[in-house]
Length: 276
Image (cartoon, rainbow, N blue to C red; front, side, top):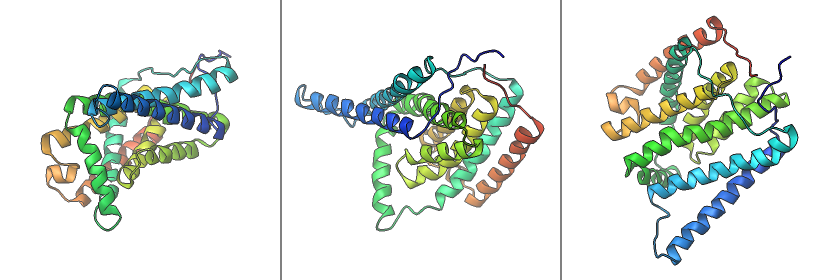
């Protein structure tokens, strides 16, 4: 049997602690950098869009490096490495409509979460103000949301967590669901949690079936690009408002798209690549 060039690591509570430690270390480093700029150079750039982009990159890199050097290399003798191979064109024709269908479904679910009231109102206002910092700079938003986030987040949630759970012996559907829930939680608010968890299930399914991390990265970037285009060109945050249709219409289209292309991808197109 040909030996795989990819390390077969597992993800457990220790791996979770290592990722969390990398997150804490990155956050502390960014905090010191921001305070240094404020007190030494008299520059308050901690809320600047470019600094938020830089901060996310530092934190994610430290999380990935911590898992690589403290878990993967000592236990497998190999460095953290992933399959980024492209697949055949027919696969792309199936997975993008599949993702779009779940995007519509996720939008409907998100729209059911209140944005007003004693708790949700204040929380939503804080979330809106936070997102406004990125929207102020379109270039930074595109770089962050469409390029950086798909790369770093897919490496962590699909490449490290989901794959590590499957390697540990967890049933694939459980690994996909757990990594998707964690993916939703890291967004830090109920509106993005709902959509991110649902979309994470599609990303996880595509990764499990194709074994290529490139595909969920492309799908993730596609989702974020659609959101960015809606915000910049329609000044709306969802498809229903942008196209002036009912949320139930969006849901219906989403269910049809998702159902048809899920059937084609899973039942008709029995792709399941190996990783060597």
